[in-house]
Image (cartoon, rainbow, N blue to C red):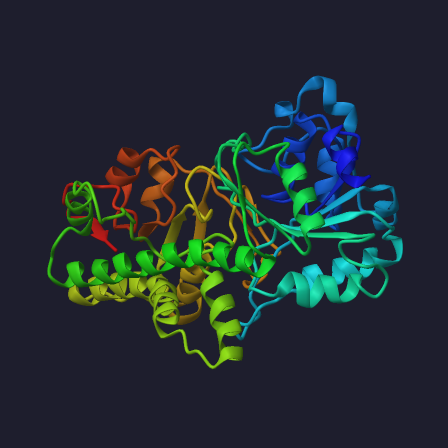
Length: 430
């Protein structure tokens, strides 16, 4: 029986998508004693794994217990699905250019592996998506060949990983759901192997919307604090002082920080997923959409602050040389998904014919981005190099940056992260 294989750790688990969620998940199951096969269409990732190297800044393959290393294999060959007992999708769910859900990674993968699916397998979707996805897409296809809950099992268990944190995040409560009672029991047995606390949801749609709600909660509050940032800027008030003071209240307040725009997979995208789905029910998600609009406006607002500074000093922003510090969407990691730095680069180049360079100790090269045609490498910096640029923009607040060196050698410094709590003549808070 499927559940016995899992409980006895005899099940072979296949992880599809060996990225920021898939690789950590593979390591968790490996360290729990399972045999794991990693699948990815990116041959570079597979080659890196074969060499024993990790392509994620916060994940080291040395975190795999030595006695379990032989249980880890990786491939681009989807025919090996027939050898699996459990299939886990950790696939991207980005937005199309018109801000509607792009589920092509899920759809293409299930279609590719469909011929190799067999009876009594379990498929779990971890990707963040709109309520109804697991049933409307995966179940619809799988049901052509199997009976869900009888000879095939379907689970939805949204990832709650925090890119940049350690792989051992098993203390984060895990949401689990299944298409049938049997599917739910298998979900409990499977994820109970690597997570300390499981939260049982009534159905898969409830689990899907819960994950969206968690991220939209953050999006709305970040949208609020970004709007407050704009207001405080006009009033010449330090937004960071306001936030820190408000955070001393022991109830009714959660601390969120403003920035140059949102990054990562979830927060910039999830509001649009729910808004799109809500239209089916004739609901206009005004509040949620407004937060998305505000957050997406921040790169343009940052650049306007720079432009206004040049105008005030009777200078021209055109053809200036800009140094972008940090292209990762979050500090101390190499994850560039939806990073606001690329939108800032795009506007500066297109509107002001600027010459752009960047420095990021975690991202040596940028290319092949989904939404931006950018191909460039990180430059090395020192006092002389920094001083050659007309302006320096801190987009990502990596701890590795020497902020005193940056301040002293920048002709003009744009601080989008509230690094400097003192006022300096050459610094613009944006």
